[in-house]
Length: 628
Image (cartoon, rainbow, N blue to C red):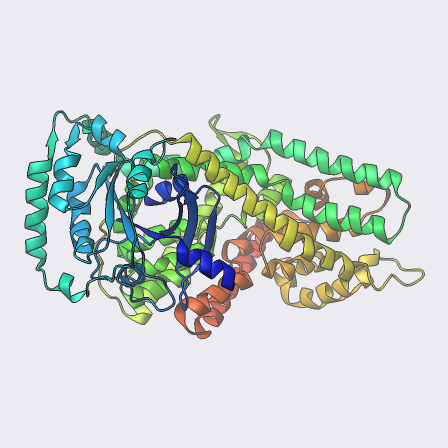
């Protein structure tokens, strides 16, 4: 931050947004700041620091810091330690907040008020935002905000963060606050000196005088949970939901994929018809369109997958899934808290690994880090979709399911099962720590909010397109260059790429990968795939585009692969990507989170061994069943 920015920041009051997990704090942060956000990490750790700015109706400028969710200032996790140190003014390099906006889940005051009382003892200016008040009213919960404000000694306002205008009451209170000089927080010893039992008696007394229940329409949630978290019906419903998700990934995506493919092909044909043959046309058609276009076509499938994940998260189902899987995970030595990091890893292993900081036991955290990459991240989806689309018939099985979707579902299950197996092995080699109880707040069911859903999908699309336009494009240009030079000698009998630098590298690696059915073209694609797994699809597009000529150039990648590979090779590649060694970014995060490069090497080594073994067995069994 420059000198001018520091001076402006110093004049602008800093508000810390604090609350329990799942209280709607981040939704309120997004409502207040919109797109005016800066995301980084706290110094020395990989915990996300999110700060934004906004201007109130009175024209006052504010800075807003979204602190990690916490249940207590007696920190038990790195997240809670960051929150404690920031609000107490103990975090080096961090400005102590001028005031605190404490976001409270109005449907669960009993859990939230304990931390409110702890923070109030710091003596900082504070406003309590009763969030999700619309849900509380529907459940018959009545809160006397004036009496609650009197009991807590701070202003209390109602908010509905997911609705436009739901933050206005909070803004009016903030505009009335005056900051003549910074307030120094009271020592944490003042909080630690108060027994937990006394805090709980304060909480019960406040609830008795400030809340009431007129009627309870929350029984609908309880009735639904009779099925959703039933020990038999619950797991069956979870499996059915996941199965339907993967069916939809193929069934719903076909039309938009065809449109994108037609657009990419049309641009390629236009360039081929209007540009003279030469290096520039080869770069644009075979390098850029052949590579980037091969990846871009899978955007609809990625968005469909995340559509379901966001819907399940927003409606309140995902915590129930964590509850259902806790017993299974505990049986293989995983902490119940491992569910959320592993679920995050279905999007990307990097945030999943970073989310393990909520796990208190060091051994449990390390095991979760080591298996998180076995969850099928979204970068694998383009590879799976490409190979499945080329070799698995698009037909119904039993009249109710799509065969391609069934194969995709099995690949995701294979990743989960392998992760459980590795966790079981590590439990016996590293020593178990005993089953850790899972404490989760199960929110009421509600319809997903379309605004949040749209923002979430836009964010996933933006991330994917940014990767396509930066990392993947850069690597595709590099792959094209290495695949084009040096040129083929006169009288060559092989495609020009065979004699290039990439061709020579691929042929060298093929000695290692030939036993699992990988030719030199696949070996070329594996190398840039270390930067990002979906890059392998673009690399295959570039490699095979440079291997074709004439009318063959108009073919898309799927039919080319169907003609060039055998079925055992295709199945072997699918098995490889179930366990494929991690991208370099993930290995770097593992080093930072564990504090040792040793675990990065261990992760890469064991995943390579699993991938090679699984591909070898798959290839040999397929050859035997197909008669060689």
